[in-house]
Length: 412
Image (cartoon, rainbow, N blue to C red; front, top):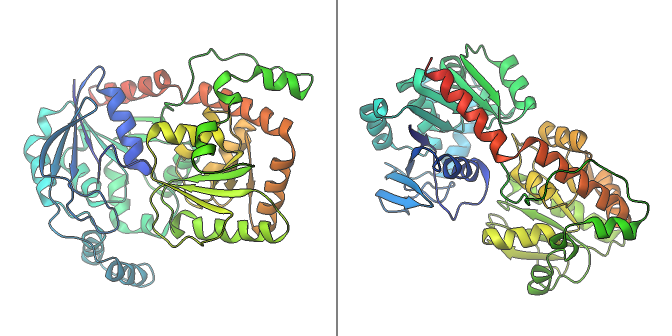
């Protein structure tokens, strides 16, 4: 079959968010189908500036068709307009202007899709929020699958999104939390729906074993796979991390909870804590120049694996998540997670896996951090639980079979 993925930006350099999620799915699907990605020339989601060359590219077995954006985003003007539209009565035309201001605004992509949609057996749209999905899904809803990657935020309550979810015919939800939220918020008439999520590439090949509690910590350590016993030695050495440390990976941005994370970790240090906080990813905010915060930068996928293995705890501070590949990848390599309790999806991951803790405020963050750092046996038990949870729910064969069912539903 010939399948098109439509997403706002796409590239091997983009290692987080729905774009990374989309790439992982597209690459796996390309093993058995003719897959194309229709996207913009943007690499930066703040400005949507055209940085990739327009035209056709080939990335890891996937054909990528890029279309130039008609305009860049003025983020200050957009934020001001968002404040107005979320707090005042307005018209549908106002919302369409907001959609254009938000970007990426790429009429060429929509024009191409309008002319060529019948050449594809299925169209898979990633992320409800942006114009390529809002405008593109309406072209051929009966041939389309929507992957919303949604959570409760002001934008989702705009009328244009009520229209979007109302015209969707097949949806791949990330989690049951997202599914319940969307189906109680919108009137949806679906011919196909699955709770899918995303496979996790960091899983090792050893078979899933029934959980058995080791008699002591030494025995627990022996049962860990060899790659976990080393705990990412090369990453620790490269970044001079000699003791325990918390790791965050992704966009280093206030909107992802990073500013609050640094504030909470500062309070932990002020109370005598001796761990370090390491940040990997794209820096979109100022990071304090203190010895106990280390900036590792944007890492390759291999280096990210080493970092996740090396970390004592992986922290997920975002208050808004629809899946969180960071949490799942940490669990896959046996590292416990510490998550923001305001993200219902993260709380559900922790409860279902018994592989992490979650915090509501500064005091809970500090106490959870101290507890996890102090108890080696608890961390190892959580690590085993996390690996089992990911293997049960996020193996690639499970994920791909769900997409097969959704595509089959479109063809009935």
